[in-house]
Length: 204
Image (cartoon, rainbow, N blue to C red; front, side, top):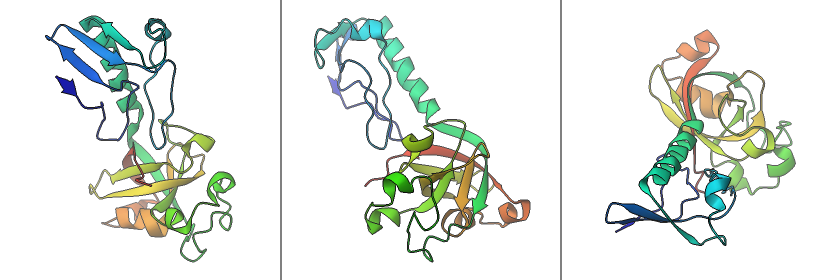
């Protein structure tokens, strides 16, 4: 019985390409050797001791339930690494619409790599700076998307990372992200929101 590619609701995928159950005893898994980084997501690193058993990338490897559980544990760990709860989110006036959605105009850190993206890409989501405790940092975070939830009201929105920050959390554009999340006004009064975030596929 074939089971679809392992995916999570936060759009992370493992290096496990295909999982086939044989008589509920052993598994056959197609494993690319090494670590791969996929656009708008992450992959689980297969331990070298496991990858070494594969003669060539893409070869099938028959493993027992014990190793299968290890791989699934790695996968579950990656899911947790892609999200974080109770993070402080401040706001910043990027004013993207007034600035023509121009990353250079607002001196965004990610402008070095993403200023040349099409206008449709730059205005698809509101903007945020990211320096959260969990997830990629610096250039690796640029262009990725977060689903952000206001823990007080459960309001949700998707934001694109265009900048870095130093507050240990998020610095949201006020107009496009912070204000829509702050549905009861408490965040503005407090000067920040407490949010959960998870990395999601931008759908570009």
